[in-house]
Image 1 (cartoon, rainbow, N blue to C red):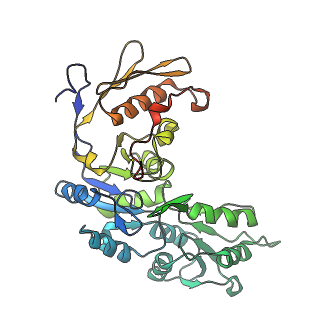
Image 2 (spheres, rainbow, N blue to C red):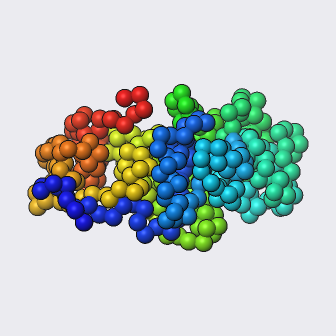
Image 3 (tube, rainbow, N blue to C red):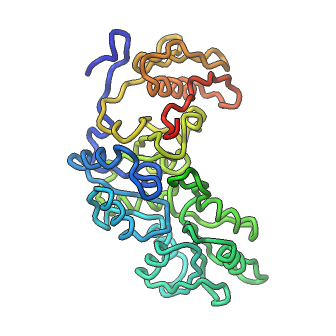
Length: 349
């Protein structure tokens, strides 16, 4: 292992080293909208020579075959079975909840309808058809009338058990080519407001979708590649696997420094090329200074001090996260210099 100069911390193995499986989120990691994120395809194709690639997505708007076709169009080589979707996890939960062949009200797109058909359920779009359950996922066309049908079906009826309600995921936003747009969590919240209860969730960060992936690929020696702390990273930690946060999607440096213990990634990289690069170790001096590369950050009570900016913006962010996370102090009580969470990695920066 080498050094970041005479005063730098040592380099450890690349995040890819020793992994049997990489589980890559899609929106914000591989692509934004229809187009690939610069360098993502090349990095993943190179990684595929050393580990199995699986694609794990909360987006329920498309089928697994459609997602695989999209990825192949970008230059990747997945089989349809390499794509693990939240509709697959949601329908697996549904099969444990209502009898096979039941009629189910769908709020969402082709991804949900396709998985329901594969499992032998009957899909309907109307609460008047007497559905046995409601299943909800994101699709760009979902509007008020679809959310209203869900609310009508889920309305409390005296003397009857509440109708089962399963949602694919809780993502509040979804990254698209023009920016961040409302995600399925926002749509679920609208129905929740109307019916005053919450669904059971199937996608990240819930364990169902990870267990589906582990069973399908035959290993738990996996690394999660994500852009969202509250789904990708939190889910990976709950599933007991390490995670890598890229700065090409939703969550930015400000969210990283404020991350709660259950949402802290093992690796922070600018983009997927960081999979292949030796990762600098984090060291703590006797006075509590966190050192990454040539960057140094120390806690003085509730004040976060940059001791040395170093020669790498990403190492400064890593050192800042390490110091703040190790302090055990709540972020809202800290004085954090803006330089520490400056976003040098925004596409429009």
